[in-house]
Amino acid sequence: MINKVEICGVNTSKLPVLTNKEKDELFIKIKQGDEEARNTFIKGNLRLVLSVIQRFYGRGENADDLFQIGCIGLIKSIDNFDLSQNVQFSTYAVPMIIGEIRRYLRDNNSIRVSRSVRDLAYKALQYKERFNKEKGREPTIEEIAKELGVEKEEIAFSFDAIQDPVSLQEPVYNDGSESIFIMDQVKDTKNSDESWADNMTIEEALKKLGDKEKKIIIKRYFDGRTQMEVAEEIGISQAQVSRLEKNALEHIKKYYK
Image (cartoon, rainbow, N blue to C red; front, side, top):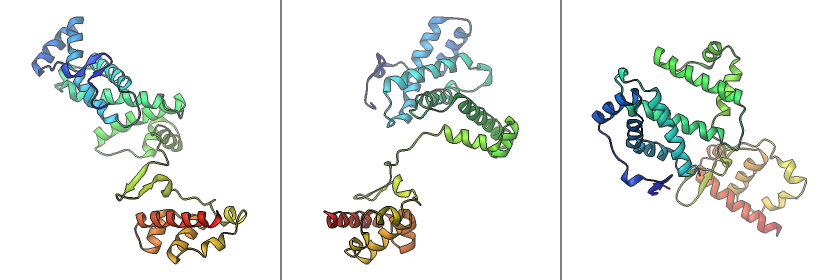
């Protein structure tokens, strides 16, 4: 997708580039209702859309879809841009394009979030941005809730709801040979000795393990510790815990074959 030349029928390698002077001249014509100037301005800023959508590569989204949504953000930027503010168009347009793409990704997420929750989150984010500009600091959840007239728990929930979901299989660390996944960071208090001992005699299998492997298995699967917690408790790296745990599980599997 990164090396794709044609997106939505547009040859991206031949897109025009406008100077700041040309942009200003075109914008004056656009405000006067000149459609040809508007089309020229849009084509002259498609490279800006391309540069923005590169931030969203790797999410499995189609490049054409992202480009089209980015163009919607570009057009909205043109419609709302004010020349008198003495701000470069790209400075104004980039956040608008990013916002449009993020809305698209959230609205098309497989995990559906109600419209009312999303609307509350967007209002909270807008207030957060205004507050930060005026006060020079981030508002607290309580301050946002008071401004919008809702409970602070509703604000916290709405922020959580619009976050992009993360796969438990996503790697968070790799030392070149072993990967540590988000799943390895999750603490499971239900994964206790009851769920093992009810179905098999695990004690015999544990006897086949070395002292360190045995300790890791007990802490991970009987005590419900995360790999990071185990690493801190026995004084080795998390990568080593991951490697020893996998070896121990392989030994246990062989024992029960």
